[in-house]
Length: 412
Image (cartoon, rainbow, N blue to C red):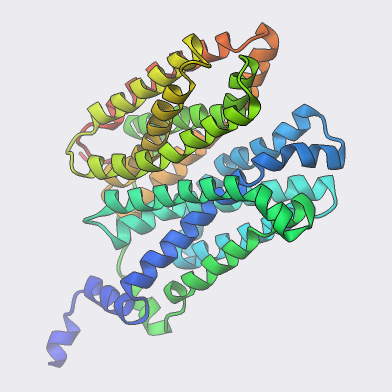
C-alpha cells in the first residue's frame, strides 16, 4: 500500500486536495461570483456620469475619463498578472484582486476628484488581474470543458454588467445617499465573492504543496513575437474597441438622429441583454469545433451588419441593429476568451496569452470612445465614425480567420 501511495501521480494528489477542501460546486460558485464583479462596477457608473459631472463640475472630456481610465488600466495591468500568479498562486491572486476591486469601488465614491480617478485606476488594475487569471484557472481546473466554462464566466460578466446598469438608479433612490451610495454599494458584491472564493485559498500547507508540485505547464517562449498570439490579441482588441465605442455613444447616436432619449436607452438595454446570449452560445460552439475561422468571420460580419444598419437607418432599424450588435459583441467577447484556452496547451500558456491579448486588447479598446468623440466633433456627425468602425470589422475578420486555425500556441 505504501508503495502505491509513493508513486501516486502528482496530478491525482492535486485533484484529491482540491476535492476535499474545495468542492467543485464551491469552485463554480466562486467563479460565478467573481465574474459578476468583473463588469458590474464599470456598468454601474454609466447612468451616474451626469450626476458625477455636476457634483465635481467636470468638463465633458473629464467626465469621459471616468469610463476610459479603468479600460486603459486594464491594458496596463494585464502583463503583470502571470508573474503574480507564479509567485503567489492563482487562487490567492484572485482573492487579492477581488478585495482590491472592492476597495477601488469605495475609493471612487470619496468626496474628491483625485479619489474618483484613483478609484478608477485601482478598479482597472484589479479587473485586469481577474481578466488574465480566469482563463488560466479555467484551463487548469476544467481542461476538457474549458470553452464551455469560458462561456459560463463570460456570460456571467455580462449579466453582472446588465444588472448593474439597470439597478444603479433604483439603488440611488432606495439607499437615499445619492450616486455615492449607489456606486459604493457594489463593494458588497466584491466582499461576497471574496468569501465565496475562500475555500479555494484556505488549504493546509501539505495540500498547497501538492498543488504546487503539479506543474501548470510550460510557458510559451517568445510570445510577443508570435504571429498567432498577435492575431488573437488584435481580434480581442478590435472587438473590444467596437463594444466600448458603442457603449459610450450608441444612445447618443440614436438620440442625435431624432429618437427619444428614453427609447434610445431601451434600445441600448436590449442590445446588452442580447449580448448575454452571444457570450454563452458562441464559446460553446467554439469548443465543439477544431477550427473557429468561420465563427470568427461570422462575428465580424454581424458587427458590420449592425453598424451598417445604424449608418443607413439609425431610427427605423434601431431594434434590428441592437439585436444584431448584441449577438455580435457578446459572441466576439466569448470567442476571444475561448481562443485563449483553445490555442494554448497549458494553464501557464493560457495565463501568458491572456496577459498579452488583454494588454493589447484593452489598450486598443480605450482609444475607441475617445477617438469616436474626436471624429464626431471634427466631422459634425456620426457617419464618419460608423464608416471607420465598418473598416475595423474587416481587420477583425482577418485577425479572427488567423486566430481560428487548428493549432496550439508554441507548437512545432
